[in-house]
Image 1 (tube, rainbow, N blue to C red):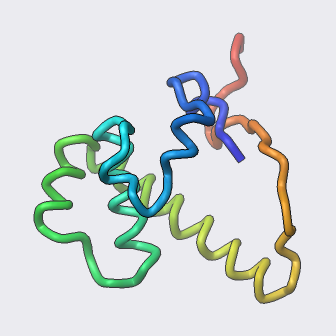
Image 2 (cartoon, one colour):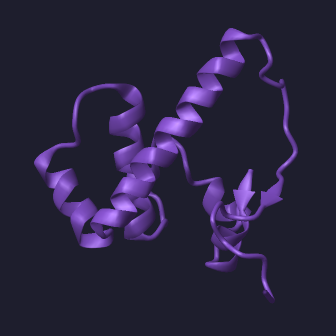
Length: 108
């Protein structure tokens, strides 16, 4: 799934392909690397991000944006766990572009 606003801000499949275990050494923008570092800390359950990671996050995101990242991770993680527990996760999914929650469709 790709949010429309991410596409509008330049996210393409080449960038998505760099989102892997080596994302820190990728050509992704620093903002993306900081978000991925936060997601790794959040999802891997190793505790809060390191002080250095928190510094990188604060350099790239406002408090409101950090809250949105955390809530988004919690929601997506919870839903994925529920789907797995129910045996409903698909083997393969097409890439789908959806409107960003809370945003208005273009032209309105």
